[in-house]
Length: 357
Image 1 (cartoon, rainbow, N blue to C red):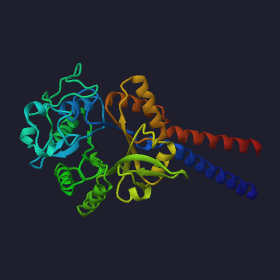
Image 2 (cartoon, rainbow, N blue to C red):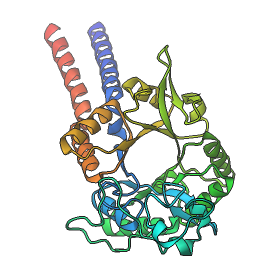
Image 3 (tube, rainbow, N blue to C red):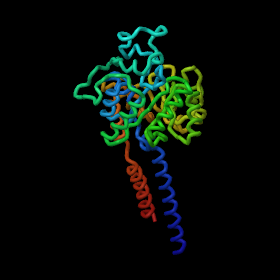
Image 4 (tube, rainbow, N blue to C red):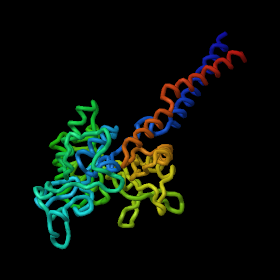
């Protein structure tokens, strides 16, 4: 009898251990998005529908369900950060009708904030001056300051009932811009990822510098390096910079929390292996720019990258990105399902042993 009990105990212990292994294996096989839902970042606001980098465009993106809004940042002549992608005003505003060229052009840094505030932002690409059924709180299509974008994110957070994140980009590799971005964020209560903020740049020098400054101030806002996907002949994935150099993921992880890579780039396609290697190095993987206007084509593109494990998507059409992300997340089994699968296997194993013995 004693030997039977001992034998039975050993069998149950082995079965429990096997169950634990099965559960661990199933949990490890879960998509990365199961632990952290992929985020939708409104690229320059709802730029496929309204003029880019306007308060109206940001507000529409929030209404469409975007998790983050993206202000690219430039300095005015009097040192104010404004939301503007280009370092010149000509492409997106009516500056040419109000001012003569300065120093041969219309650089943002050659105009004061007061002057820039007289400009109207024009729609580009598929954008328009209005969106059916939507009336923004601020109907003036003006160039907003960084502070105004933050104020909008906070006010919209109160309206929609959840925190609207911000994802600013330092467009200039400039220590003064680094300092002002950090000081503006801190003064508005942004100190860690919990505040739903990312800081991005194409410059690894800029992010390395911001990383040092953050540590000195006891800050921990996640930093994202922008660039292209690079895969060496041996299959090793790296982060390609606009300078043409490439950094190892280990190097990037020493100063940044993630990478954001361009999609549909023939010289550096994003693959599941690329994303897996980045994740293994502890890096998030975001990508830009999802700009297909056709809903069917857009849905297929979002699905393709989400199934690879993409953690975030910059999009011109926030509504389509949110729909695709939600459909993808809904298709993933809940953790409880994995647990039930494991328990089911354990039950089968126990029943089999009982039948044999």
